[in-house]
Length: 217
Image 1 (cartoon, helix red, strand yellow):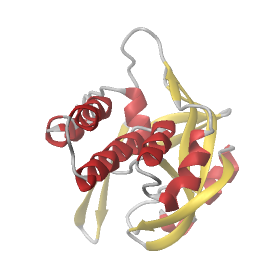
Image 2 (cartoon, rainbow, N blue to C red):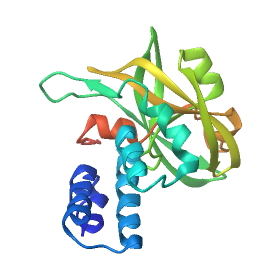
Image 3 (tube, helix red, strand yellow):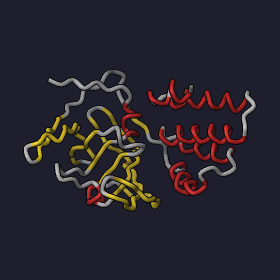
């Protein structure tokens, strides 16, 4: 019920409340208890609540122990947050249509972003969870600083090592995003034959921004 009613709609706190009720008020087998805690850890990880992930891992006597050092490092960082006015924000965007060998390869939504004093473009991709992504060269040139922790990344171009980085502040229109986490990956990991991509807003940006409406001509 928690998975079908809430998880597909990113209502992770509501989902976790249901699992917590099961743990507190129902007699569960060891396997059922473990599965509930694993789902609670998943909810916490995707929603960026790394402190809760560690707490749920402890309740499960060290569930996913191999990930603990990585997540603990993220839990010690300042929280990701967005500052916004009390009214709806309109942001211009571009849709880039790509064609290769005469065949349509899809459309990419690009939004203007100011990092430091430089204006650049980020692609929106809600399939990139739970972090946003930048290439190593983009991170270096735009002040996205590595935080000394990383892990292996499996993507469409194979397996590579990623480092985690943080943008202390960036602006998207009237929105100011602070402490946004990025996976910093080798340039070739974001390479594709259709277009050059250096920076991608993933699920952590979508979660902070909330509801979006795309108003196309």
